[in-house]
Image 1: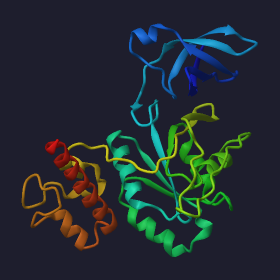
Image 2: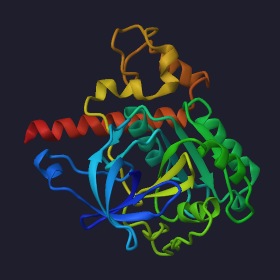
Image 3: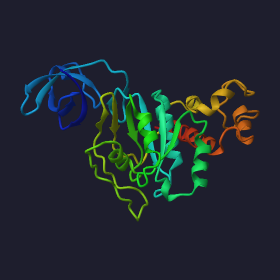
Image 4: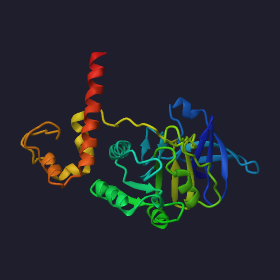
Length: 296
């Protein structure tokens, strides 16, 4: 019998079998000998131990179409990054780090700005302009009014989607709106620090329909850039691609070099300055990380 691992806690794996139930399973010892660990999102074969008590054993992990390291999940084919447009204000530098991470995994990405009922149209237009050339699909939603949720549902159909974003931005409220019969704990915002309290403590897959899944991952408050070579960071910025090879110097990294096509495009308004400034900040972060390692 085949199913999908939707949750893993303390050595137990919960496997959803389409058209049936969710079985609590253990992994057979052979996986440890092969140094293979089942991941949330894995498609697996199970043997039923007790059908009445819904107990089984995982006997085979089917081939993975993708595998992420942080969070450790499998078979994801797109990402949904949720940020609040207000309360808390969006940390665009963190969002850009997420986008670099997803570019590294070659995952199509949906950016969802939630809580649009709290802002005016000018702020929606500003964020649309910043990310219009980012290569991501940008949506604006409100779980309070329901605006934007039908379009989000449509984007999730037929996919296994990794849901990520900081705490307190409304991820749990969005899941509650998308999925029937679940009531996830929603996080309040800490008045002292202006950030959300963590409410997701482990990765878990939720079934939207027979071929659509959404994987909720623990809330992030920070994220390191998933690129080790600062000179390659430019390839993770889709806005830069059309200018590659047009700079005066071969291998231009678009930071300090003269006659740089990317910097010229920024000055001309063809590349959004907020995105470019974020790139420069990430570049220097990688540069400083390398310098610290060389000292050690």
